Structures are given as C-alpha cells and as structure tokens.
Image 1 (cartoon, rainbow, N blue to C red):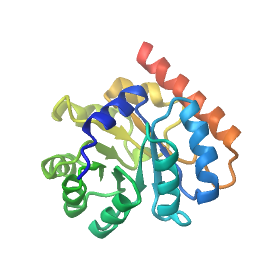
Image 2: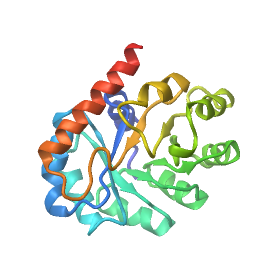
Image 3: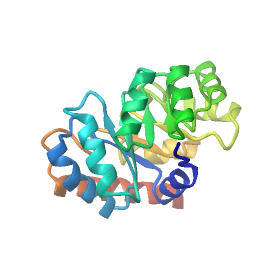
Amino acid sequence: MMDTTAEFRAAFDACPLVAILRGITPQEARPVGQALVEAGWRLLEVPLNSPDPLASIAALAAAFPQSLVGAGTVLHPGQVARVHAAGGRLIVAPNFNAEVVREAVRLGMWCLPGVFTATEAFAALDAGASGLKLFPAELMPPAGVKALRAVLAREALVLPVGGITTGNMAAYRAAGADGFGIGSALYKPGSTADQVKRSALDFRAAWTGTMRA
C-alpha cells in the first residue's frame, strides 16, 4: 500500500492547482505533462471518460514521479483499484461516494470527492476524504464558499472546480478556497503543449497574485 501523504502535501504546497486533462490521449500525455511540470504544476488528473485513460495515467506517472498523477470522474470503487494498478495516486470524483473514498484510503491514495452542501462535505471528510472538490463552482459564488468554509475545520482543503478563470480566482481565494481544479480553460482536446504551458503559467501567476492579495 502506498502512503502519499508527504507527496501530496509537497505537490499541493508547490502549486495547489489540479490540471484536469479531460479528453487527453496517451500520445499527448507526456508532452502535455512536461508543459505542466515546467510551469510548476504537480497535480495531474486524467478523467476516466478520456480515451484510454489508464494508459495516459501510467505514462504520466512514469514520466513525472515528482508529480501526483491520478484519475478524475471516478464513480465506482472498482475503478480505484485499476487506477492504483496503473500507478495513479490521486482519485477525484464529481460526487461523493463513500465506498470510493474508503477504497482510495485503503490503498493509500489521496481522494478529492465532489461535494456541494455542508452535509456532503462533512460526510466526505468523515469517510476519510483528503480534501473537498467543490463542484460545480459555477453554481456557488464566493459568498457560498465563505459560508461553507466558516463551518469546516481549517485543515479541510476546499478546491472549487468548474468555471474557474484567472479573473475569478482571487475572489474565491479570499472566500477561503485552498486551491482549484482547472479543466477546459487549461486543456481541451486539440490543445498543443505550448498552449497548455501558456495557460498553466497564466493560472499560476493568477494564483500567486491571490496569495499576495
């Protein structure tokens, strides 16, 4: 069993932004991963509804051992074991499924289930979630994040996902977000590695700006 606590904290502290590479192919994985790593990103997620996602996860995990690579859109506990076998160490979901969280914890993986309400958030943390993917963030403005943050323990990580841009990160950060997941604004099928790197640097700069605010 892997214990990724130290690895996750190092990756998260270096850059608390999760790259959501929905639709990436195994052929694109390494050049896009290289672009992200060069931009300072270390949390790489390949959603399971991408083409041959386990092959992409395996390629990224082998090429970038300093990064924490894993899967998104993980809906069933059986998928967790397959991601683990491919070298993944991170499990992300759009929803909260206690069995998925517990299986990830059992295998020593970090798990960020999707939640939207306080009830879901506390249930996910009780199940052992490493942090909370607040999804879809388009439906919860920063004021909602602030209200949720007020009742959660400070150490509980909250990452809004969905509709996050370089222009709204500061407001969410001020409301208590600890990081973000970035999807189509960072990568979409057909994006080149150079395009991804430019976007990754822009988001990294926006995050740094929120930290200075």
